[in-house]
Each structure stands twice: as C-alpha cells, then as structure tokens.
Image 1 (tube, rainbow, N blue to C red):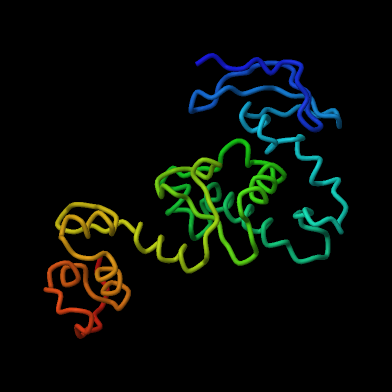
Image 2 (cartoon, rainbow, N blue to C red):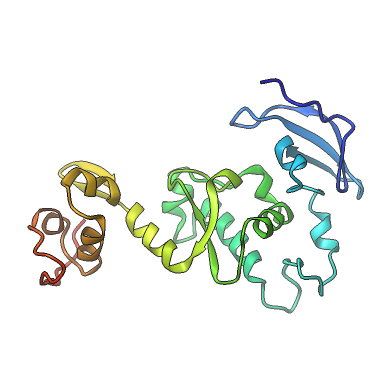
Length: 222
C-alpha cells in the first residue's frame, strides 16, 4: 500500500520535511523539523495518531507541576513511568544488567519511537497507564513497541512470566502453555508444581490427583 505523503504536514511541534527509509516492518518513516531546531525521525502512523508531537523537547519543557510531567528531576526520586522506560531500555541494551540475557540477549529491543521518553510517555498515558500497572509484551518473543505492549497488574505480569518461561524437556524447548497443551495438563497445575520446586520430569509426568494433590517440595532441575 502506498504511503500517505506527509511532506509539509505539521504535528504538534513537528513539521514533516520528507520521507526517509522505511523501518524494519516496512512502515513509512518521516524526517521532521522541530520548533526547537532539532531533527527527528518518526513513523507516519504515530504522527497521525498524536503519539509523537516533538523531538522530545515537549516533555522537557512541561512544567514540573503538570500532571503529564514524567521526567526525572535533579534531586528528586525518578517518576515511576520514567523508571519503567529506563528499565525497559537497560535490560534490552546493557549486557551488564542481570536481566539482559532474557531480553537483549534474546534479540528483544526497544523500537525507534521509544528511544526518547516523550513518545513513550504519551503512548502510555493514552493506553491505560496507572501507578499500579506495569508494562507487558503481548508476544514474549516480540519487541517493546506500541503494537506489542500493554499495561497489566503486577500479578498478571508475574503469571505471564512464569507461563512464558521456556522449559526444556526431553530435548525440546517450549513455553509452559505449549507444554500444557502437548501433555494435556492444565497450565496452572504445571505452574504450581514448578513454583513449589518440583523437578520438570516430575511436574510433567506425575498423574494429577485433583485440586488437593499433595505437593512434595523438590530441588528445581531444569
């Protein structure tokens, strides 16, 4: 499908200068000139839906008392949404971070639009962010980008991490949900067994005795 010509259009503080190379998904990218004099490249769809409205200077210029001010301030504790953003980038790009092997080490990255905090902040506020929620990727093998992210409770996030944990059994690696379907066992039963320390071999092969089945604590051996 032919891209909409955005040349000359204004979006917030940005004026579109011209088309540049498409992103890794083949979506149109546009070079923009910001009122502050900086240049910024953004996806056309994000310009049109209002997610990107500046080069990032808009958030920096927002008064500290404004409800949408999410930046860290000297001498102040980082705002929670700002910490979510920095944590997301760190685990995807810093190989010294303890979480890096499960993120950047697996090829997970943060999209171009979210390399700056302001576009991420505006997306988050428009997509249900609350202080008791955390960011989650719908596809555990997908990147941090608008189409693949949502906000869920910490409890839901923890369950998803357990469910999406890759488990190797008899030379084959799958996530827990896939193993549950293969074995014909409820995923919650497998999740509960593993969380109580059962060895994978036992968790996957021992007959289910019902809700009251006795759980024997074992050393985890994956």
